Length: 258
Image 1 (cartoon, rainbow, N blue to C red):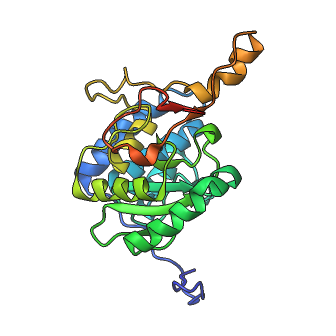
Image 2 (cartoon, rainbow, N blue to C red):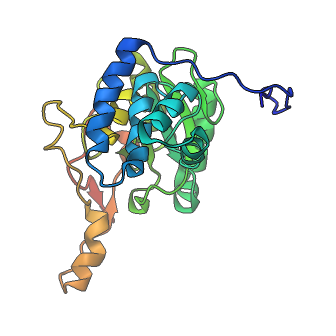
């Protein structure tokens, strides 16, 4: 049934999704066949196929869902059930950069709530909304499993650790201006569409991308070192807000007591 933006049913069946243009469909079909061939059961390829169609338009459209259903012999209802379950699949147009501020417990009390509120005001958007220039979509997200680097901001699923209100503002300003921005760890940043294609399982062919794998930081390794009987290191204190965004921190900036 067709509904209004307010969710009120108009009592009319929804029209079929428009098809991709022939050249786009042919390209996506070739990529989809490569993905499907990796799995003994074709329906297991649904998650990467959703990333594939998301890489085409920046979100999972009804056309993309119909494409996945046709390729896998599923119903559109089965595809939609998956696409609407996982938050990584967007159901409306998104910006080039998905800026997610962790507002789960530890990040929140360490400054995540303040960062999110400040970015809403700074960008003039609410949760899940995109700036007028189409560059940044802002959202609050749940735990990123990087609690020892709280508060954490993610951009297209790459980590920006130990953020402050000021550093987060500089980060989004740099993204909108097209300045080079380096994650704290991991591969170089790319657009949301390019990220979706990588998540679909296609290689990241950018120079240095493979070599720039993430690794645990000093704070993450304290427990391991203690378990191994090694000397306990000083607790890491990283004044991230004082560092320019285009510098990748290579180690502790200071130690407690300095």
